Image (tube, rainbow, N blue to C red; front, side):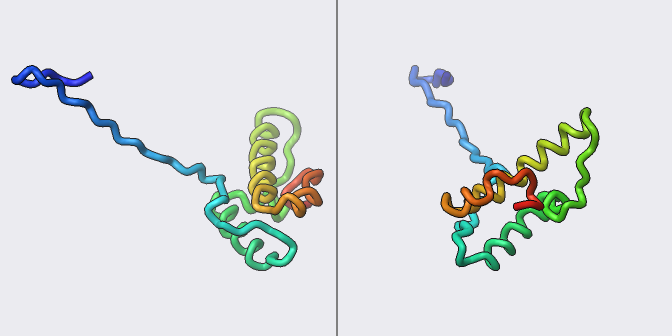
Amino acid sequence: MGKTQGSGEKSLATHEIVVVQNVTDNSSFGVKLDGTNYQLWQRLMKIHIKGMGKWSYVDGSATKPAAGPKFNEWDTANTNVMGILLKAMTPEVMELFSNFDSPKAI
């Protein structure tokens, strides 16, 4: 609602819109693995995932803990990294890797 000004007019409140990009979104790379561009794709994925602090899920050094809260954290991060990799592939390439259970396997 606006304030009433001295002349009886109401001023309109303005709102600033802020867009926040999800840090796991890799669509800004503009590169999807298509079978011909592995070197570029691999480099971009490595930069992105290392920047998130999650490269250990790709190189396999993030060990899977036993059931419990630590397992849930590991599973969520593992799934997020798999999603990043898969979303950066064309549908044809994605189909080849969609049944793998870890980023390392991908």
